[in-house]
Length: 173
Image 1 (cartoon, rainbow, N blue to C red):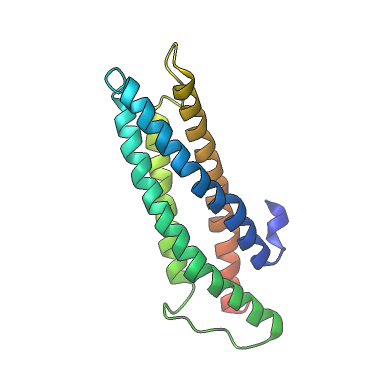
Image 2: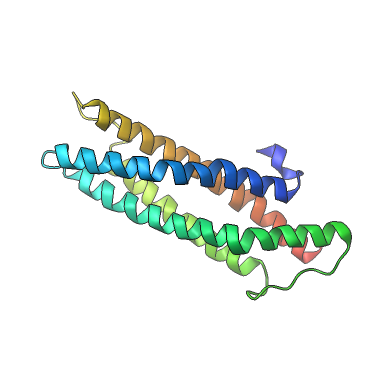
């Protein structure tokens, strides 16, 4: 992660979109399908699966909107800020005012996703499949754990590297 402390923000944004947004977009339909299968087969004996399914689906919908806002509004603005700073041009103006406003919204949405991930981990007993679980159940919990791990990395890059650096660039530091 320290490699991103000095690399151009445009490269970090490209990495986040390709690696992490791509991962969410690939894994969401796969995990949603596994959740539906496992809930249909094991829901009666494992009522937590229905809760996990509804939480995951809600989080996935929020993440989908969240990533579009980043890709269509916030990230292009950050790239324009960085380019202006690099060339000495005046900072671009945005309809939202300071970059810290959408950043605060994105960080709050990251916190919401983190809270849902914590609930998923708790409901699944740390992604521990029940004794004698079928391969689909095992694949589901493994996939949810990978999803959580990737999302934590993704949020770390944005909250702790991209966003603070964008705020510094805008402030002219």
